[in-house]
Structures are given as structure tokens and as C-alpha cells.
Amino acid sequence: MIGPTLFRYIAWRFTKALVAMMLLLLFLIVTVDFIEGLRRLNDEIDVSAGQVYLVSLYTAPFFIDKAFPFACLFATMITLFQLNQKMELVVARAAGVSVWQFLLPIGAAAFAIGIFAATVYNPAAIGFYQKSLDMKAELFGRQVDTNAKTVSGFWMRQDDGKGRSTVVNAKLARQGGTLLDGVRMLRFDEKGAIYERIEAASAEHRGSHWVLSDVSITDSAQKTLRTAVHEVETNLSAQYLLGVSGDADSTGFWDLRRTAERIRLSGLNHLPYLVQFHNLLALPLFLIAMVLIAASASLRFVRSGQAGKLILGGILGGFVLYASTRLVTSLGSNGIVPPLLAAWSPSLVAVLFGMSILLYQEDG
Image (cartoon, rainbow, N blue to C red; front, top):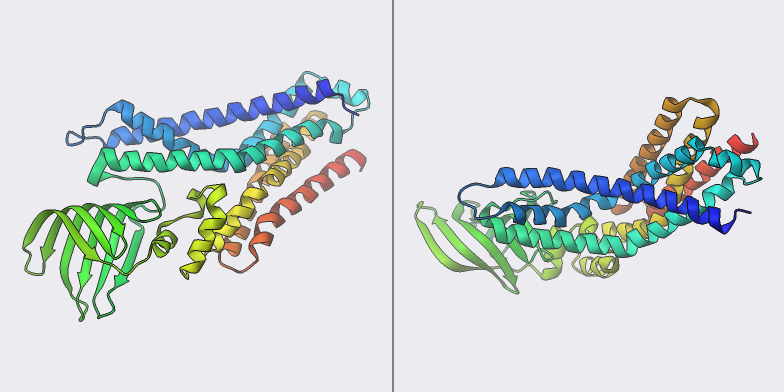
């Protein structure tokens, strides 16, 4: 049986490699987002480079949340490669330590990191991301822009029950769709003709009304009226706005089930939130699957010397697993397969597949 000293040593080497990869990715994302933020600055926006950098720093953790599986894959490869290069695993195997025993500390570390990523990192990253959206809205005003799902793709239509309707477009939706920034409204009469166009810096949902700020109203005669505040009636509920503006990926682990229930009550599709909840629950097992796939390539690398082919095979295996997971997740989000099956089946299949490869390599 592997001793506690060797267990801690291997687990520490793996954890250190994974953290280094995540920090490198964080640096790259912050740098790219910061440069993009500076590009959007002009003389009309009184924003400093430090404020733009802070926004980028708050945004980055949200985007690297999805990188944990790949970081785990590469960290396992790096750890086993380094241990093999120093002949440490050769000595361990000569002392009777099996492949399962020296993969145990890596698997245990990956499992613990998966729990941390799902229950602590994910809610924190989403909290920082929501903060970054608020900062963007405050700093850039009408020119706010973001990489979120809500950019210019956020559209909704509301009817007044009397034949009239309003199409709402916003550059940014916050707080479950109850706060909109960069708002445009097209109002249609009973015949489907536009009779009013409204542009506003922001809009806040207050029960039966949208309260718009810094408003420009253009009527059918092309006459424009500017006002500080304007109200537009709405029959949309807060639950409905949450469903049309929200995104399961931008909802924290601890809020997913409650949000899913609210969206279900509004009559919209709540399955993406349930699938995301079970995906996060299955994340520790998914990381273990990545460890097994990486080990199946890294261990043979030392014995046969076929570095390029085997490492490429491990990377491709990880990408195939990730792509398969996203495909099954989409099926679960659309009700084609149950959310529980959509979230857990890829990880279970990958673990069994990785164990089969290692058993074949070790025992023939």
C-alpha cells in the first residue's frame, strides 16, 4: 500500500501543476479582456485603465470555471511525466506500488478539487461576474458591452392584451432580467405598425411597469421627446424575466434548484438549471475520468517513447469526453433525456473506459 508521505507528495505535485495552469489561464483571459476593454475606450467615456483592469479581473474567473476538466487532464499528464522523468515512479513500481496506488493521490486530489470547484469556486466566480456586469453598466453607460449571452441577443416581446405589443431589446440584462442597460423598445399598434420607438440608458422592472431612465421617445411622425424618466406598462412577471434573461451557466450552485423551481412556475423550460445542478454534482467524478484518460496516455509514454502520438491521444480523448458531455447536456436541457442521466452518464462511462484501458495496459 502507498505510504502517507508518497501519497501527499504525489497529490501536492498534481495540485501544484493544476493551480499553475489555472493561474496561467487566468492571466491570459485577464490580459485579452483588458486589451479589449481598452479598445472600447474613447474620449466620451471617463474610465481609467485601472477600472477596466478591475472589470477584467472580476470577469475572468467565470470563464475559467469550465477549464477545470482540461486543467485536470494536463496537470495529470505533467505530474506523471515529471515523476517518470525523475525515475520516481519507476522506483515506486519496483517497490511494489501498482498503477492504481500511485493514481490514488491524484484521483483523491481531483475529487477534492471537484467538490471545491462546484460548491465554492463556482458561486464565487459567478458573484464576481455579476459584479463585473454591474461595473460595466456603471462605467460604460449606454456603450456597455459584454461577452454574456445577453448581448444584443436579449430580446423579448410583451403584449397588452388589446392587440398592441412591445418588442424589447437590451445590451445587458442584470438581476434576473429586472435591470436592463442599453434599452430599445419598438411599440406596435393593433395593425402591426410601429407607432413609437423608445431608447433609454436603463430600465428597471417594477411590478406592472418598466421605469426607464435617460429616455428618447420618437413617435410615428419622427418627432423626438427627451425625458429623464418614463414608464412603460408591462404584464411580464419577475419569474418570466428570469427565465428569458437568465442562463444556467451564470447561476451559482446553491441557487440552481431554487431558480429552476421559479422558472418552472413561470411556464418556461427549467431543465437547463437541473442539468447544470447535476453537472456540478458530477464534477468530481468527471475530473477523476480526466485523470484516468490522462494516465492511460502518460504511463505508456515512458515505456514506448511514443510521446507525440500518446499525448495527442490523451488530449483528443479529453476533448471527445468534453464534447460528448456538452452534447448529452444539450439533450437533457431540451428534455430528450432525463437531467440525471444527462449529467452523470458521460462521467460514469468515461471512468469505466479509463479503467478498462489501464487494466489492459497493466494486465494485458
